[in-house]
Image (cartoon, rainbow, N blue to C red; front, side):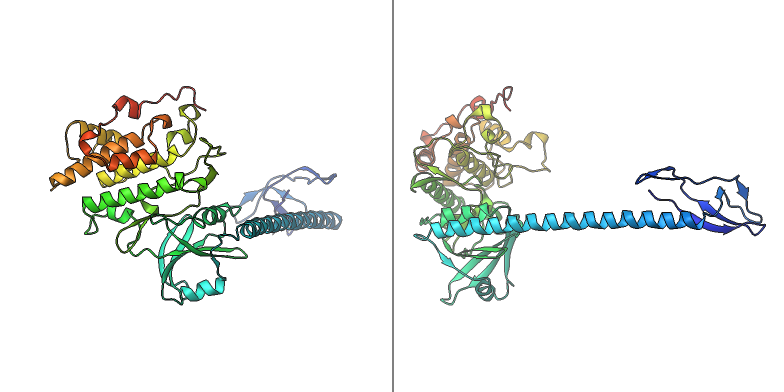
Length: 418
């Protein structure tokens, strides 16, 4: 409770206190009353206000005492709160460290190289060559003593309970496939966490899809990349002791080496589960909007399984064919807002999606990728093919492929969703 008092001198020499804000109330059981005098107008001024007699010395001492008590209690409360917050953060940090260290000790049979933070600083030349940055952290280019180039992903310090780090090491730490990025090493030192990968000379696939410059690839090369990505995903689903569901398939996580061989990367959202299990349990939806399958949001559509990756793969195919992002704010027509519908309509009308200079072989490639994409993005996961079946369709003659009915692709009943 605050009371603003300003000492002033009246025309007769009497001292007054102006009351800026007059509050009457109880403070720690003590009543404070201030007697208001008659309103006065100061001679020679235009200031008008209410005045009270100057408080006695006893009242002044009482006010000072009360203020001191309030201030002391406030400071004590703030100090106690700060101590509690610091202890909580410290316990949380220690529990994260323990969680990661326990995991690393249990995985010694396939553990990559462990680097110190000082070594990573030397390898990257002081983290000077930044390759990219995102929600996960920052990627830097580095060079090992052997001369091999590496990409070092320095995770953000606020990455929750360390689960993203554990997911990456638990998945790609044990994977060896030509179409999956290779984890060379890692670093865990205090709050600093980093992952060391093979360096991919040509960066990520998205810059070749969405670029308007001279970075575009031939349709044949793009098709080879699509098949390579499919093989990488098929290996994750069926080639390991545990099924690995990626949950974030998109062009940005497909890395390309010197020869444009694709590598699936970024396993921070990955989920491992037994091969015999057909469904998995999630406490929350995960992935990137535009690539996330409907069952992640609507339980009545179907169970969550590896079919979520199939949907993401199909949306990526859509983007490759249309050479644009599937979620785009500025489009020529409102009918293009939902990208798959626009492509389906264009395909049914025999349009070439505004793609120019297509050879006969290119036309076949585009048609095949469109048809496969529509099979992959069907609303209900039960109707989506496995990645093994997807690869069979991609490698078969396009004349044998038929586009699924539009009602099957886009129909959805959300009336019982929750």
